[in-house]
Length: 99
Image (cartoon, rainbow, N blue to C red; front, side, top):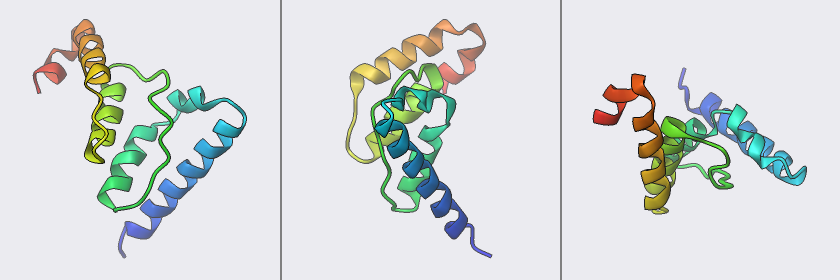
């Protein structure tokens, strides 16, 4: 059985949730959802996704979000630099920064 249908359904659910959060003015709550992973899956499946900025994402999660946006041609060098600085500040992240 192909995983495409359940993955597309997951992306759809996250997109709908983001629209609901935006309606309540609570998009910043996306920090509690790994929405950036959904953006990667959307890209891989050639599906659309809702993007409302990076909210309060920091370090590796911010970098994931910037990279996902970059895959669609929306590169944000400033956010990338911020994420790298934050990641470097985390002592246990030395290997992540190098890779």
